[in-house]
Amino acid sequence: MPKLYYTPHSCGAASFTAAFTAGLKWESEIVDLAAKKTASGADFYSINPKGNVPTLVLDSGYVINENVASLTYITNQVRKCGVENSCVLNIFSCRVPKNSNLLPIRR
Image (cartoon, rainbow, N blue to C red; front, side, top):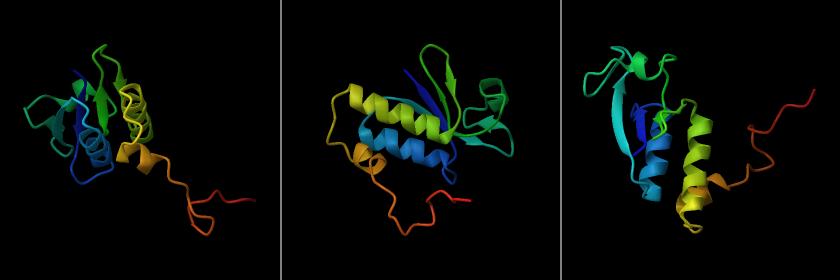
């Protein structure tokens, strides 16, 4: 079963929220980044040498440790499960408004 390491007050919480909302069956554990420990007391740097969250450890042992990558993986898992009307897919398929400051800067 995949395991997601995250902090509740960072972008890692988005991965936790997306996986939970989608109903994916994953383990999760909160990380104390200052102490470099997981809630169970494990050395977080032995799990992810970069020390960042979210960190998603797959059944194969492969580690995904960037927010965009983990959210993309979660979205793909939802699609594989055939949950096309999931609010997770709706969130990720939103378009950025034209007047948004999130559009690329042209030089």
